Image 1 (tube, chains in turn red, yellow):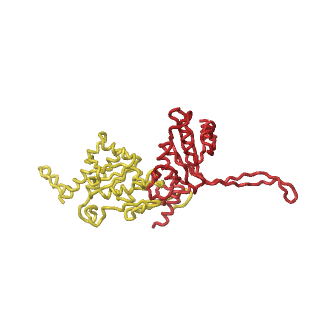
Image 2 (cartoon, chains in turn green, purple):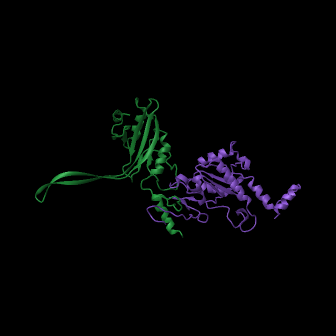
Image 3 (cartoon, helix red, strand yellow):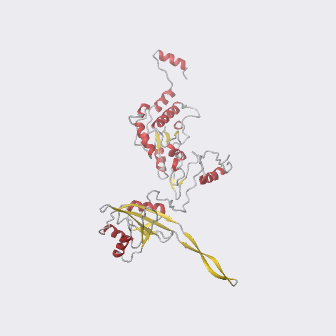
Length: 208
Length: 211
């Protein structure tokens, strides 16, 4: 889908919405729109109801855990060193905080177009609230619950935000990148790589 | 015990002689009532085993009961997730003695392809005693029938008296096992230590040494 006219349409309908286009450099060229959490519901309603868009079907919602990134760029700068002008390489480091992301795939059954990829992000990995789009697309209900379960993202406005797969007493979020799984690696007959190390720790304690 | 030769001699004369133990074991092994529940794709093979093509009824085990109170065989057919494990143990506890367990397929034995997942129990034998293991992913119906025959052989060979007598005849042995609780990170306890201990395995690699 060509996203630029859709972005223009949203900007006209929802003033103040912060939109950003994320380009997909692959041949599929499925560019996506990042929408801010405060305007997300209004944007979603527009996408669903506007004539010519009519994205009436949300097929898929996925969570993504983006870790903090540190990028360093090297620039050559001319500088005076000991009275002589020299070219010195200067490294500037920029760190971007990590965040959680929910990715919505939208189709229009009425107009037979799609998918439109809509993304929503949290501010960082501590502040985990974002807007629920379940009031707009009912099909997002279970998938948002799954993201809440596995990533710990809280969807404000969700009618029934409970864990979906893990039990209620569970406190971790297994799909987070920093999740540490329980150490029940006592018996690993075909241990390899990382598993081998974890199994060996149990073996050392056991009587031989 | 009756002499085998005498027994065959008597049967030729139209007299049937047996021991109480043989009769008791024959009765138990010939009418196993499995509990009607499946957990994953192995259950499909289990269903196929009971249907016309493989016909488990030939071995006296076609009466699948929907209640644990009426069943004496549990076929753990499929992946046991940690969320499901307490229910499986509770069902086992609700079955009356004598009761048997067939651990069907790679998942029920060890976790199978999901062994290193956070959410799959690494073998149902961590919580309940298992009589017969059938490997396979999933095992074919023939393998399940073979497990039934192996279980029947096992029952047939049981001595009703003495130290090796089966659990249901020994009041000191437990017939119910600890139901794990949902913990904050894992099931608690993560295994029944009285029942299951990690078998010692030799882990060797080409790069590292042995441990």
